[in-house]
Image (cartoon, rainbow, N blue to C red; front, side, top):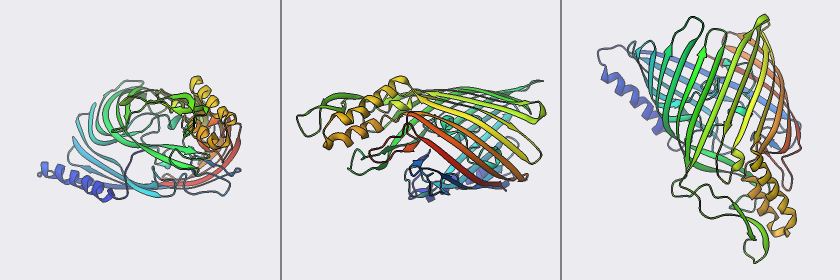
Length: 427
């Protein structure tokens, strides 16, 4: 998620407008063809548990998890030159209680020939099959894209450059896209007993600067799409060392042994390699089979971010209806889950003043170990609007950082039923 504060939002929008004006003046003899469009989703989700799932979903119900509103303007200066700006309003990426307006896209594009495309500016990266259109719910059948896979990348947006080359074939068209850029994002943490800075439970967001470079190969035709990508990221916090682990020593503030603590040291930046795979295949009788896989590795105290996620989905188009089912799984590395269990279990071995401290250290390892089974359907009201309904069952094993565990409780060994209803549209 991209860090865009409410304070500097007008400056960002003005910057996007300035980019349009600059390009327009660069080609004064050309007429500018402007195309406006918009999209939105009104989504409601409710679970059968009091704990928050995916930040907002609980037994009280919420519209915050899936609701979004956006608008986009495309400018065409010639057959070769164009520009796009997209803005959206959605729940904040650095507060759990606020909404946020942000610029999602703002780039200039140049197509020197039919098979080459160069874009410069703020871009959405081609990670998974639906990453670039993830905000536009009317472009896919699921109520929400499986978070087990679509949360693998620390950020999907960069300010940088993308170059793609397409080879047109008789059976499949092949596209290779390389990109490089930077982004400022936030990593969310949740302490069930306390945070690192206070004795109260809750979430906090650490700002992180990301550099990302990758190469993605996509093969597609009207019925099938296949994608493989490798992405090399670098995460850093200006002026702060990252990557420190844990060590067993004295408890804070007293010469009492037996507490895990954050170790000193660290590095200036963390390497974040990510592998992505995806395929969507049309089968006979209007069935479609879709599967995606992502794997990331991050050597830091938040070792649970080193994880893999995958899902397999089957759907069938029946007139205006598209029922679907998918099974998804995400799991941190065995090393990360073992570390979580050691620190979390140590809370029962120390005196009460330090139990919350041990649990928050366990929480910042950010463990993931859960599966989701989802059954749903979409109903296309028009070609540009769709109603969706879904039931999903979430089962956690060791732990899952998608769940905000209660004070003294656990996110592991839980079973959550989530019921969702949404209406998505474009115009």
